[in-house]
Image (cartoon, rainbow, N blue to C red; front, side, top):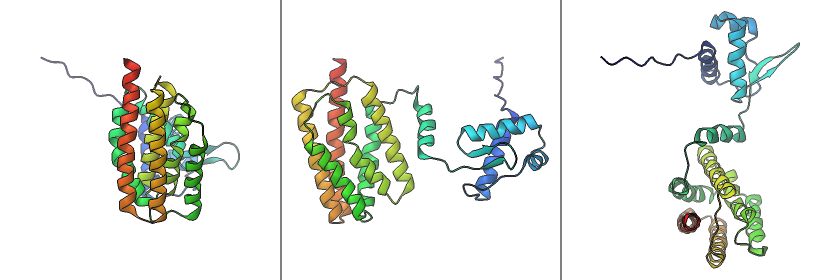
Length: 246
């Protein structure tokens, strides 16, 4: 007879933390809103002071609440930052060996829709930032093995994400780009000088074509240009990765 594997038992403080989180969501409490004081918490959740403080500390570590000590202190709802959320998501992927194939299979889906979604919403300030990004890249003397330059080429895409009216699409675009930056920084990608120069010119041409589509407020054109840009970028990055292993 096969022995049953015991189910993992969650700590009481973790269960309380989940209940507090659900209460924040269900009551739609805004950032800065004070939560119950300690006496009310203890009465509501029927736990010890130690368990309650551990639960609140867990929520604080997650970036969901702020805790102020001393007179007039207590817990309040925090505004969760994109940086903190990215950090937690990266922790999830830390030991999962995310590959360039994984990143581009998603990037090819997400970024064409990003380009289409912002085409009709970009303000003049956003367009100027995009033009500045294009100008910065066009003025550089190309260094085929410069990681900083590779990362700087992504600034154009970050400006689009910042202007995106869909917060979910914007967030996932930024997270995918952050995964790509980590690979550029930590992996030894040694491209051929001629191929890299050609790719950089292609990328610059794509950014200029996107800028033109944005000026025309043409989402279909922006989507198509981005599809072609992502296919070119994927081919270049995968070739670099393969050359590293040969």
